[in-house]
Amino acid sequence: MSTIVEIQDTITVGDLAEKISIPVTKLITELMKNGVMVTVNERIDFDTAEIIVGELALDYELKLKSVTHQTDEMNKKLNKTVSDSAETRPPVVAVMGHVDHGKTSLLDAIRGTKTTDDESGGITQHISAYQVAHNDRKITLLDTPGHEAFAAIREHGARLTDLAIIVVAADDGIKPQTQEAIRFAKNAGVKIVVAVNKIDKPDADINRIKQQLADQELLIEEWGGDIVLQPVSAITKEGIPELLDMILLVADVEDLRADVDVPGQGLIIESRMEQGKGAVAVALIEAGTVKPGDYIVAGATYARIRTLTDTNNQPIQAAGPATPIVVTGFKELPEFGDTFFVVQDEKIARTKAKNHAISHRQISGKVNVNSLELLKIMNRSKELNELNIYIKADVKGSLTSLMDSLRSLATDEVAVRVIGSGIGAITDSDVQLAQSSSAIIYGFHVQPTKSAKQIAARDNVMIETYDVIYELIDNIKQQLSTLLAPEIKETELGRVLIKGVFKTTKNDIICGGEVTKGKLTLPALARVVRDKEEIAEAEVIGLQRGPNEAKEVVEGEMCGLHLKTNTKIPVEVDDRIELFTRETIIRKL
Ligand code: GDP
Image (cartoon, rainbow, N blue to C red):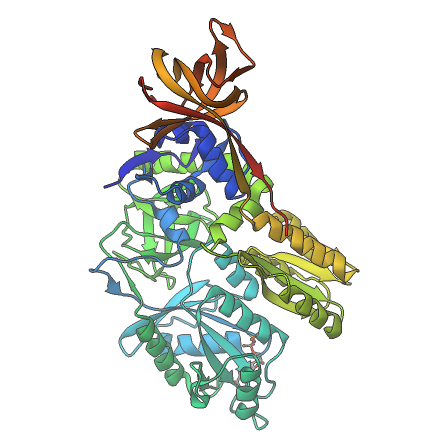
């Protein structure tokens, strides 16, 4: 059983070391190994702390303090675990595709299949998410008005979408935005259903699209692949029920389930001020149940839910997983992308919102400095560190030769993963896609557009542009080098057999003994060894020969040691203390 240690959203390195009973130097070394350069008094956030404690394989488990459950954390994990009592939930579906291929018309047609009966006067006000019923089951549709919104949702870490419908006009075929949509969906790891729209048109050519899809490495079922393709017409409604059947079928295969009997939690997907209502938030529940009157925290604000309705304005008494809800009662406007969760009472809600505000401020400054490093640990796979990059070039030829050069860069430890590439200037959506995959953008003979530059600066996306291939490759090499775990070199200075312990306080030990090997000098670290087992590590802050401070003490001489630790380790007579130095050597490719 591991010991549970409760910490706040952020903690100083020194405090954490104390709580998990290891020398602060060891913790700093581990952080450095993971690319986080911090000193003893600097703060790291909960996520980083949790990862590091995990890496150290200690018998400690970190928990967020003063929260009834770890929703923020849970939401960040892509593969959420659910309990045995989890229930089947509706699939959450996003519709994407090239402009004018019929996304809006298709969404309207799908809504029409359910809402024709109770729609009062066909209100066409934009709503970001809604549910439709098909065969007595529900489907949640996200009305993402473009890839930007989809990217933004991804960027906020939640796996909100289970399935993407890629709309392709049968008379037009696959276009650049279709390709981009496919890339988005693939990168997000969501299932793809292709809706070939406008089949009512005389020049519709479904076979051509099947071939084009194969060119994009999407092989349809008919051809032995696993991509579901459904011909539809948003105008005649042909194929729409079948499309919904397919969505449910894919959902069944995915076995989408969520816990219902837990406090509600999810993501804010829209928020606005409305006259007479105040702050109104549209949210998508990911797990649990939300009811009117619940206390709910979203980012730095909270609410006692005053009204709870579905996105058709109908009041609901309790809403479960994958349901889009409209909530009023927030003190301030929550932000798009804030995770929300239900808490027990107002006091917890207030504290949690306040803590979020504080930790957000503290972290954001830090993240700017270290974001790349932090992202790297977050994205790191255990064995292989990958550098995500996104490449834009002026012509196909240079893109091909760049790709070839990149292949030679991989080693056993690190590799380059090209998450996207294309010809032409670096655009807004390149930046968004790069951000959602924590990638660096490389431009070869191309520059970012003005607004792409602004977005990149705002969102902390790195853009590197080059006119010489080897300089570009050199930069990638440098970036890859930062992914290599630094080499930690320890050099033993000497050993002391402890003959007496003179003073121990909480953090200080003064002891003495005979140097049995080597030559002791400062600065040094000390390892306390008892019965051949290392029991602690400390910093040596003083070295004495007799009553005097000494610069060095050699084998055969008696010496005094002043050790400093973070935890109380009583050194005993007959313990062996080994003095050593530790260097962190940054490696290069
Ligand atoms: P979006 O930009 O992808 O949202 O595309 P829209 O839904 O706005 O549709 C673009 C145009 O295609 C509009 O003029 C629609 O009326 C037309 N359209 C959409 N779906 C169909 C269809 O199934 N058949 C035909 N003939 N026209 C369609």
